[in-house]
View 1 (cartoon, one colour):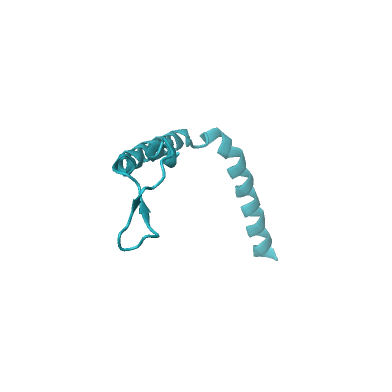
View 2 (cartoon, helix red, strand yellow; view 1 turned 90 degrees about the vertical axis):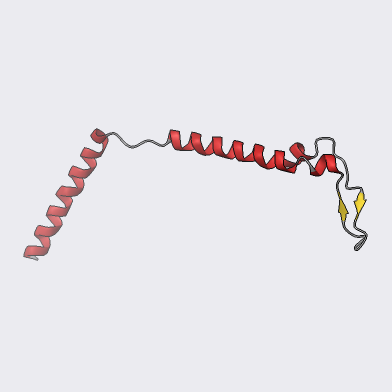
Amino acid sequence: MSTHLVNPNGDSPDLTDPANPDINFYEWDVAGRVPYMIRTLVYIWAGLALIGVLLVERKPNGADSSVSQQSDSEDVNVAETEEYG
C-alpha cells in the first residue's frame, strides 16, 4: 500500500549518487510523495485503532454472577477443608 501511495506509476530510481554509484535515488515527484504516504498511513492506523477501541466492551454484570458465585463456594469449601484437614 505504501509503495502504491508513493510510486503509483512504478518509476525506477534514476538519480545516481556521485560519491557511490551503487546508490540510486528517485526523482522529486516520487520522493515528494513520502510525507503524503506517511500522513495517509497514520490516518488509516488511527482509524483502525479507534474502531478497535470502540469495539471493546465489558461483560454484563449478570453474566459474571454465576461464575463468581461458583468460585466463592469453591473457596469456602477449600478453606473448610484446610481448616479441618
